Image 1 (tube, rainbow, N blue to C red):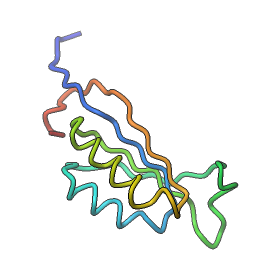
Image 2 (image 1 turned 90 degrees about the vertical axis):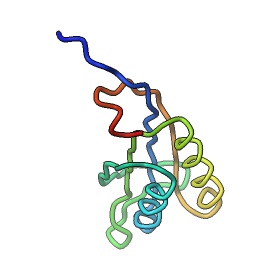
Image 3 (image 1 turned 180 degrees about the vertical axis):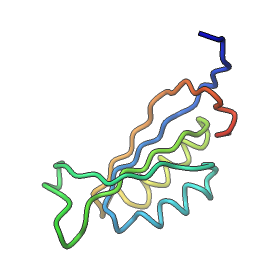
Length: 103
């Protein structure tokens, strides 16, 4: 296997109510994310089973960012949404090939 340059980044994952999707996507880009992956999510958590027919499925947003941007995203989500919405955010280390595209 060829030796490829790997860049250490953070994978930030946000799972939340669909109503927050557009607001969160705009804010991620404002905070420095270069892009994101968006998928539908269903599940059960502390607020019960989500994704009713009326609400639609929850949203899972993933973005690869620098540590500084990851901190800004976590702070924003916690400060703006934790109290009133079903939302979780978690951060993982990621070793990314072509990672320079994300910083």
